[in-house]
Image (cartoon, rainbow, N blue to C red):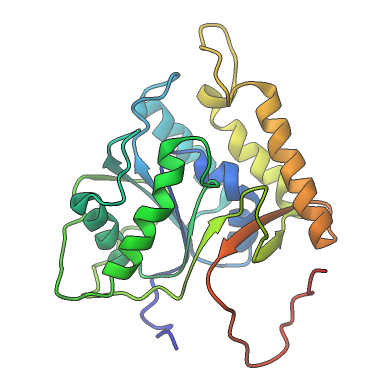
Length: 257
């Protein structure tokens, strides 16, 4: 059983780029934060290869989105955008050091691991780091990072840390392990996404991309409605992985069909 007194945060969402956590789990982040859970987001890269906006502009947008979602904290590392590598010792070490600082109960990777190479690589990198964080004999450094000024400071590191559960945002063609009802949190999710005007807007001077096509945000809503039908609610977000749930009683939460 996990030592709850040692836990630094309840949920850590690890994403390759700013806006990925909001795309995959914005409603869940707001729901849990609204319930008093300590929710952190870690962006692995600065998004320096983005077609629109500079890394500093995107980080400023992330600050607004973090405030909207009620995050406890947000940190941005400086891994190379476009080149997240699960077998890279330095990249693994940076994530291990972060895990030992934040000491999360749950770790979730977002968005779903499809299309972008960094989206595919991030769950593999985090999987390795979650295991290596248990091994006290390796003490890597966190390295250069940016901390959201509106959130909490990074605590001192533990010598080792064992995560309780690791999940990923569930792809459309996979069976979900967990579904979160975000019906009452959809508005917060859409406001958080709108904070990234450089990525989702198509104002004069912005280069058209896959994600600033209005059809992209429409797909996000269709996905939430599809998972919602699965859960018997208007809108939902889905996670997969995490191993087998161990219960000591019937849960208070309603069980989806």
